[in-house]
Image (cartoon, rainbow, N blue to C red; front, side, top):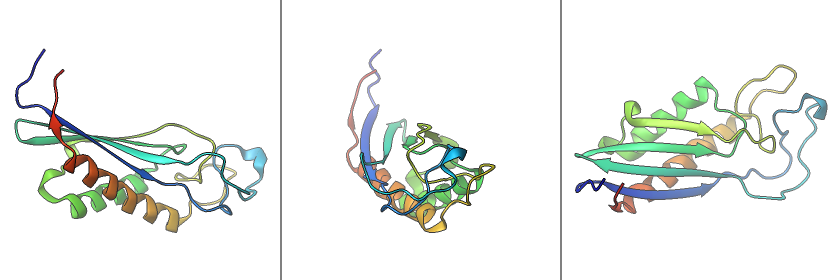
Amino acid sequence: MIVSDFAAGFGEADITPPPGLPLSGFVFRENQLSAGIDSALNVRVLAMRQHGSVHWLISYEVLAISATLEQHILAALEAGIGQDFSRSHAVLTATHTHSAPPTSPLEGEGEPDTAYGQMLCEHTVRAARQALQSLRPAWL
């Protein structure tokens, strides 16, 4: 189906932390710190505008996003994007990688690093702005 007023844009930002943070999802790591970087981690944002509203699909290469971190990210997007962002038009997802720092409390693991959470907020806004600026006519 062709929708005449549909537009889509994409943004991406690197969310790879420096070595030295624990990785999430394997209790047997016993909270050992990461020693290096094999592959970058990213946040990817798809913005879709139709009938004047922008809808957002935001995907993180992390194990999970806690409810608290989700609220911080949504607040950062509201502040950083403005009227083109609505919480009710946003979906946040995680790829469930075990090669990222904790972003949600898990039994047997250390607490999520607040500085990393703040960086996620900032880089999400950067990727969302990029997606918004790259909106182009698209067809479904």
